[in-house]
Image (cartoon, rainbow, N blue to C red; front, side):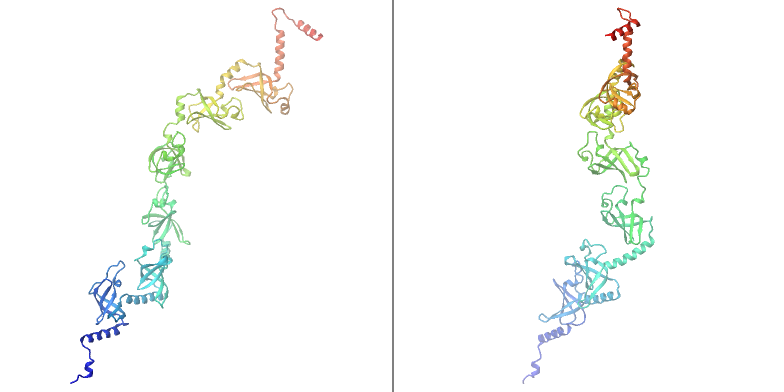
Length: 571
């Protein structure tokens, strides 16, 4: 008996199974989310039992976390979305993230419509430093300019971190959009600033954390807002760079110095929490005090020495040694050295202290004066001539000074009348004490005392001497008796007739040689007063005295003198 035609068309067992699988493939794709169970996790895929003849295949990356770790295991239940059928191999491609993405898009859309903040994770950077991709269910674009209220120096530090964002723009067609973290930060900042300014007052002490270190100071976060501690307000001491004193993350106490509500700026101070170390500085560091201090900085012209925190003094290169000026400061000191120094100058109003190293030793001038006595004649070389004084090198590093008043007992216009630079001279030590510039006091005129004494002895009043006119003045004439001795002729002693200063200029010329009579001497003051007009009278008296003096051969009478004059006139 023949088989019915319909019986021949009935598939066998294998064919029947394939038909069922084909049916599954057609009915499950593009369907609603389905619950499945992870059957196996392979190298690049996850096999999911979705309750049908056909298996679901899930990309392994969908169950990996940010660090690449597997977040699921076989046997776990997972909700997936069928995406497409692979009829050739007989399975359905499914996705877990697609469900999250669709739910995420709804969440993002609601946040945008209601202008509410939304959480998201920064998952990757956009090339060319343009920004980031943020996963908040749906992936949104975060521009670099909106990633932080400050400039992002290291973008990598944001990757993998969750933040709160504001959705600023959406494109429903391709489920994309733009978010901003900066907007949220600014909103929070405005709220914190308002709250902070309502509670803060100048003079208030608050705690904070150093958030940023710059060349000009540090920013300290106090209650969510940054205030600036300028480098000048960090310490009373030297602050070469704020990073030498503070670092990011340091917890500090600060004093509120000023609040600027309009510009929303807060000025803070740290040193103001302590007493100014310069108060009563004269008591702590009087001139002449010797102490051990630390070198903090070397400069071309010297070294800065820290006496205590906030108090520094300058050790000038010229105060390092008595043995000339060093080529470099480093020949004698180095940063970090602790050394003895002496306070040599103090200026509290300017907050300046000058220190010395060489002052700890006896000065070369002091050693020299210990070996010589006042009144002793010493040799030296004229090194420099000024209008009021002359500097003489006595020994290397030992210098003496001659004031113009100690060059001559009479007035001179300039030391150059007597001395020239480079000339070797002999001078007298005048004093054991050094002058204010630590020079040995010398004199030249004191060497002429013997010459003056001899002059006064040999030329008593009434003596006629030869002189040279040096200067013609309104009140008289200064004359040179010798290089070291000068006399003066008053205007009334120039001529027998009364003359005026104008007449004097006509009668007497500088440089001419004349005879003058010594009319008065003052040895103690080294003064000699002379007369031109007395010379003629003096000579006349000398002639009369000559005639009046008896001869050894005969006796002269007045009558004889008269007869002698008559005889002369007759001739």
